[in-house]
Length: 257
Image (cartoon, rainbow, N blue to C red; front, top):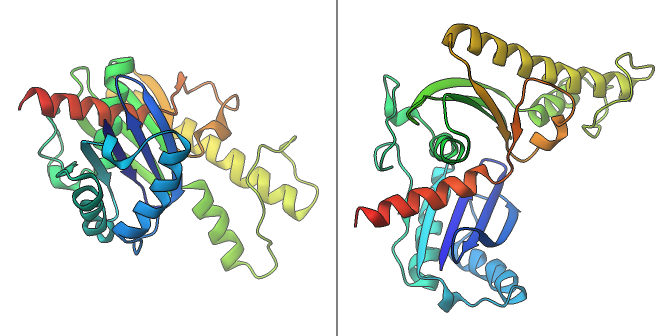
């Protein structure tokens, strides 16, 4: 059985595969100080609830954008699952060209998303990943990673507004019923929500104009569903894109021996 781990700046997703579809998918907050033993205690309970044991896991693949977590994740795989994990890097993904001047600057999460999006939806396309940052990643017609745009995530913007302005409260992010807010909370919600919809639409339009070829747009990430129904620029909302990308990379690595 394959254990696939995707560590983002805010949240981490862990999935178990015993075939083409995941048997279980779990999400937890990312902590750079969480040790291998702490990961094991957390996973033990979840796997037990799913009728699985540590002994069922024989392989592990990791996508990680938090360098401080790397040591603990490697130890988790080695100590508790008895395997050496395959850790995603810019230069070890079979069949994926990284067409930017400094390939080492391409984050593991962005490359995995490119693979997951391409095998499911083809290319060229734009992958909009809404999380700590909002990434707009370009996947070529042949599946290559061709760069993109990185903007602050919607939660960061809301937090910055609260932190920088003494009288502005911390509010939940949701789609407001109207554009014009008639109180402070409503004004903040509409400003952040519709401001981000406008950011997404504007960046997509500019990328398409510069690329000069038809492009699908696929949205993913922890809060992508927030924008579903709010914009017509996104063709597909795909919550499983990253985990699917990890599984595909694992299959390619095994095929290469």
